[in-house]
Length: 479
Image (tube, rainbow, N blue to C red):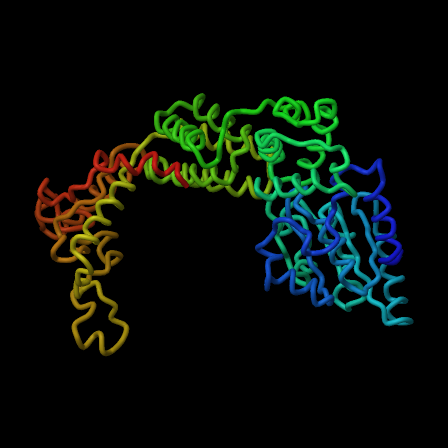
């Protein structure tokens, strides 16, 4: 099928009374595409490739409804290559080889290149993907692969190394509102001929419920228009019926956003897994960005659990990665597991308080000199000035040796105080090692202590405690 034939058919579908609104409103040029400014904005890589009309093989990775098929159509219009669409769901190795043979013949006889659009490329197994390699490597075809799955796991490395990867992001609510307003006004392809209007709250509910999916937003808008056609106006009730979900009171930049994320964090800090999972579900159901929730859990793992359970950070980071790998709605399970774990974990803010105390000293005292024995001594000039002289290598002393590591002015400072859990176990082990080393060297324990000059009295402890940091707790919800 030639590009002309393909788009004659596509044009016919767009203007068909039976085609969904999303199909009718599909952009035809790069300037019509809404969103994806990070790759399609002026001077951005993919836009430059499209405008040059000389595409190399690419893989488009993104959630459903972010414009992968649309971009393939735009690319086909912008290039003189023969356009060959293929779905990995309905095709096999024999189909791939047939396309490649036709592409070789087309290139040899007419000098015409072939652009193969392979939708859902992740559905191809290794053998099917391998069949594409010679054609891509030799330039017989230009591959445009589309996938909702992470290509690092689902697309063969040799094929990825011969292609450029472009990641498509979920559309913002503003982007979806732009698309819906365009559809409401377009009398030729959209809903303009219905003479119907829409309440801002109704469009906002659809934009939130669509979760960054342009196709879902436009299809819901069309359904809401049909529901509201008698009254001539789409209200929140029609939008709720179209989406089959109730509009929750929530705003991503106002009080609801900050109040609910604050409740979520405080529930985890208060060790209530039931409340933590509830507030998480509340945010996700209202359309909150799941990546925002995942980031908050990663921060919480260090700030409120810390080394009381070092595994908490691993769990939170794993949930963040799972969100990227699995995607919603399934990744809600990964986020819920992490939220419950963080709520159940022993709590300690000792690491966070240590950082805050150190920050205060850095700001108050400026760049204090590095003690001579801690300075780098690799360069001859450095050694000549005494850098590194007097440093004692702990591995030569059973793993610990009494020496100062802080600047002279701070030698009695104590930033970290182990509270509970694993951090208490680690601190006790270090103190045991210090006692053993001190006894072996004949030093009195009260003269030396692990990590600095010895037991720090209250005057040597930096003053900034958790009670002075209350403003840091819930302000963190303002990500």
